[in-house]
Image (cartoon, rainbow, N blue to C red; front, side, top):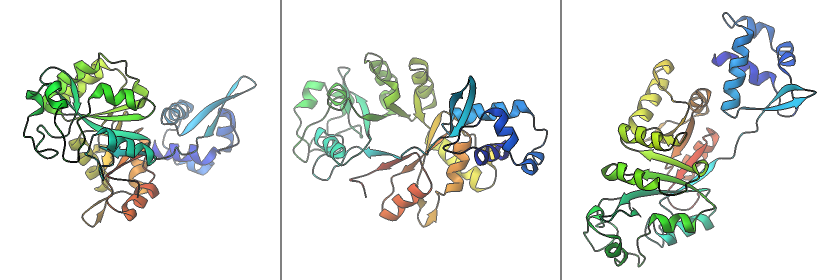
Length: 304
């Protein structure tokens, strides 16, 4: 039905609302005839799918539903563990720097302390960010709070994080080692799911989270991203297995091979999914993400 989607979007405008009957009257007859076994039910189903994908929006005129194309949404900028130029990653200072730099969303990593508190830390131990070799899961909140990190700051805990940054969106990377325990702890918070997306590294844990947080927005796991992009690039889109309720993280390039393109991103959009430009490392790669019309960009450091 990709062809029917294209015909619908060509027929609709951004400004002039059309009813279903007006859409049918204005559709390109030759292109419609090229759609095998086209029915009005097909049209209604595609309109519904385009509404769910935010490609078109609904209005009303004299009791009849009308439709117009939606303006493309602005790219969401996500800060990867904050801006760690002058601060330790995942620290209060790093996230404050990201907010001041104009990021829309903060990405962070969740682990559980020995006494059941969620702490923001990427690695299982503190070796890479401090002089301590303490293992997070074997250390209490009180003990972790006393550790000075390499840049003079301290660890940040989840309750502090959501209190400090309640007005901004979050991406929560739930580490596999304590995934179920972290999810159970998150249940105790009054989370606004419209402002949060989740990344999990285990299918069972992903299903568990969706059971506890129905309707939560999750990122596709790495294997899903690789499988989908490989299938599309090889011309086997039917095997891509794209899930309309997920966000797919794709790098702009792998070495010198360009991955992102408007054509590729559109394949995900037509399946109701979104694409995130994963860690572009140069201004050219950022521009490639924007030109490809990704929904989100995950970035290390300040905006390029």
